Image 1 (spheres, rainbow, N blue to C red):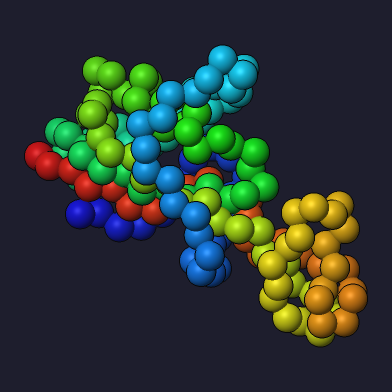
Image 2 (image 1 turned 90 degrees about the horizontal axis):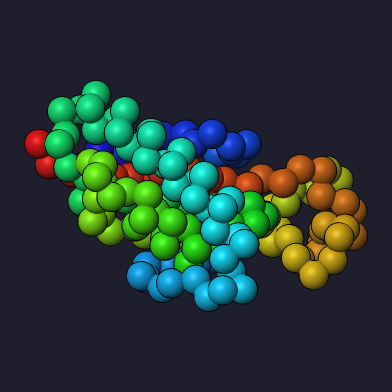
Length: 154
């Protein structure tokens, strides 16, 4: 089992808290409404597979059996569509047939005034601190797209 972060071509912020993650692990096929989203997820799946190919070769693995990725809730990625795209794109690669586990990381902000971390309300366009009412000075998580762990064999 290999642990570590393998970055995918995307703006990524390090993950700071895992609490409250929603996990997807399914072989759900996207509906025709979601078909238009599939192009975005397909390019992401290709990026993931490129990194998996490089890392598996570096570590002498001939097959990847399980991949755990984390995506931020602000990345606008549909987990079901990504699962489908990964399954389709992985055919003929070291990750063919690999189980894909996706954890969605909720958005969290940090207040500039009182320096506390808080969950971001996704229903508003302004991220306000629940303690003092100040604006979030920075988003500390919610934009991740990273391979957290993958397993394979030689």
